[in-house]
Image (cartoon, rainbow, N blue to C red):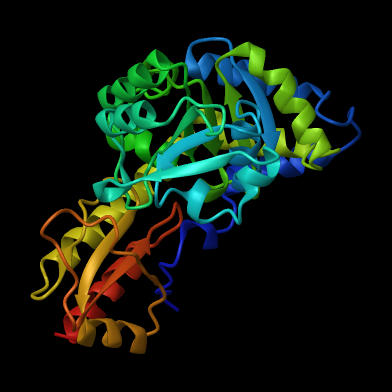
Length: 355
C-alpha cells in the first residue's frame, strides 16, 4: 500500500547499513562509556571528513546535542542569538535554558527562518552593556532552516565574522546537515569551521540513523566541559559503541550523502509537481528535503481525504508581500531517505484531484 505520510523525516526507520553496523557492534563485549575502539575510530573518521582535528561527543537526541552544545559556551547570564522560529528556541521545551542554568535565547526575525549578518550585528550592538542586562555570547543558526532554506558558505562566513568580531561563538544546528550539504555541493569543512562555525550539532537520526547525533567541537577547549555536562545530564550512554556503530554505518561509503540526495530529489519532484497545479504556490524555494506549499482549502481537504499526513506551518517568516488567504493553508511536507517515488506521485495525483 502506498503511504502518503509526509509529516517528518523522523517517521522513517533506520537504513540497512546502519542496522547492519549496529548488529555487528552488538556482538561480544567492549569497554563502556565511549572508551571502546569504535568510538575512538569514529573520532578519526570525523576528523578526516572535516579535514581537521575535531572532538566528537555522541548523544542519542538532537535536543541533547543542541542544549549541551549551547551549554558548553553559554554562561547562566548569557544570551544566544538565533532566529525567532529556530528549533532551539521554539521546539525544545526550554532545554537550552535548562541545561545552561538560566541563559536565554533572543529570537530575531528573518524571511525563510534565516538570519543574516547585518541583523545579528545590529541586535548584538544595541544590547545594553550594563551588568543588569544579559550579554550575547553565541549565535545559533539552523542548517537547513525551519522553512527549508540553506545557508550558503558565504552567508555563514559573514555571520561568523560579525559574531567573532563581537566576541561571540557560532553554533550550527545541523539536524539536516546532510541535506543542506548535498544541496550546496560543498565540503563539510567549507560549510562549518572554514566559515567560522565553532561547534556543530551533526544530525544522523533524520537521515538513516536509529538514534544518533554528534556534537563536533572545532575549538578543543570546549570539549571537556561538554563531556562533563553530558554525563551530569544523563546523556552519556553506557553502551556508547552502539551510538558509534550507527555513525560507522551511516558515514561508510558515502551512505549518508546518498540518503540525503534521495530525500532531496523526492522533495524537488514533490515541489515541482505541486507548483504546477493551479492554485498552489510555494511559500519558500525547496532547497533541501522540505516542501512548504500554500494550498487552497479544497486541495488540503482532498489530500486529507486521500490519507495524506503533513503539518500546517507558521506564516511568520513569509517574505514581504506574501500572505495566506482566507481559503488557503500553509503546510509542510517532508521527504526522507526512504520516501518512495510512488508516494510522491500518489500525493500529486490526489492534489490534482482536488482542483
